[in-house]
Amino acid sequence: MAERLVSMRGLSCHFPAAEAGVKLAAVDAVDLDIYAGEILGLVGESGSGKSTLGRMLAGLQQPSAGTLRFHGESDAGRARISSVQMVFQDSYASLNPRRRIIDSLMEPLGVARVSTRDKLSKAAKWLERVGLSRDAGERFPHELSGGQRQRVGIARAFIAEPRLVVCDEAVSALDVSVQAQIINLLQDIQRDSGTAIVFIAHDLAVVRSLADRTAVMYLGEIVELGSSAQVFSRPLHPYTRNLLAAHPEAELNSQGRHRRKVAPAQERRLPLSNDSGCRYAPRCSLAKPFCLRTPPALAVSEAGSEVACHRLREIEQYLASRAAKAHDDESSIL
Ligand SMILES: Nc1ncnc2c1ncn2[C@@H]1O[C@H](COP(=O)(O)OP(=O)(O)OP(=O)(O)O)[C@@H](O)[C@H]1O
Ligand SMILES: [Mg+2]
Image (cartoon, rainbow, N blue to C red):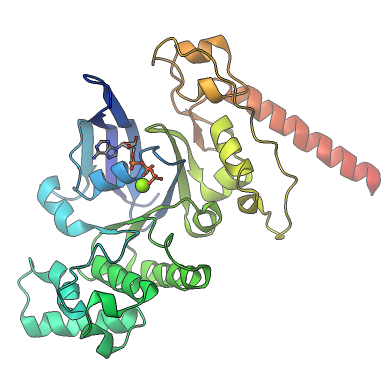
């Protein structure tokens, strides 16, 4: 197992909700480790807490409870500034409009004791590394295309050799063809640098192809965590199964053929007596009354992934029997 880079234990972030006196748990008691050099995908519907988790990692958001430990660093607070960087969706907003690109690129090197000449040469090297001309360095952000600006955003994130980069919807605002180029670039840089990446995205097909592991979030909690191959090809949590069914392209099998579509789980509203049970239960077609009463902990599945569902064993049995039946059906045809 690779070296552990970050450990989150009971990590939470609460915001005041619209109703007075009520707190909203944007991230709720998350236990998660990030390993050196891995790409960890983070998926889940809008509002599930992905950005808040990413911002806590980058030190841009203060946790309300729990611990966030950076291994191999004595002072987590100080270490985080240089060892975790972020790439945002809006490359324009993340660059100072009045600074030339080359100056913005040198900014993260500011804290290190490096001469201006060395910083300039490093920035020039990174411009080239992300496929931009030297001339682009002399321009201002508005003079670049969205794709070019995102290349700058990536160079800026990696230039100070961080140990972790959080990419929050980093390619979502780009055209599909540009997206592919930027993803290839990220992959190349990640391979060379060995920097771990937390890759937050709505595009499940992209996460599947890029991430080694994937964590699925629902209302502030991680409901499923495993290798991307496992999570995408054999999702176990009813929420993950529902999420993937809504994105059939992510269920492409290894031969590139479409799998038979799984019908989206029926939305079934059960009265929420209190907030103590499984958060997905009110929407879950498999929920039993006890699901509403007791929160499920992450349990290890037969395949080694972690799933927070009371009905995990039954789901596994069902999938195994369905696979066996499909095998029998196929054998009877052949
Ligand atoms: N600064 C804030 N103040 C109050 N509430 C916030 C704040 N930031 C986020 N929230 C709330 O926390 C919850 C999680 O938000 P977050 O942005 O982390 O979700 P997300 O998974 O990144 O969603 P999206 O996919 O839309 O980007 C949401 O309900 C959001 O409204
Ligand atoms: Mg977000």
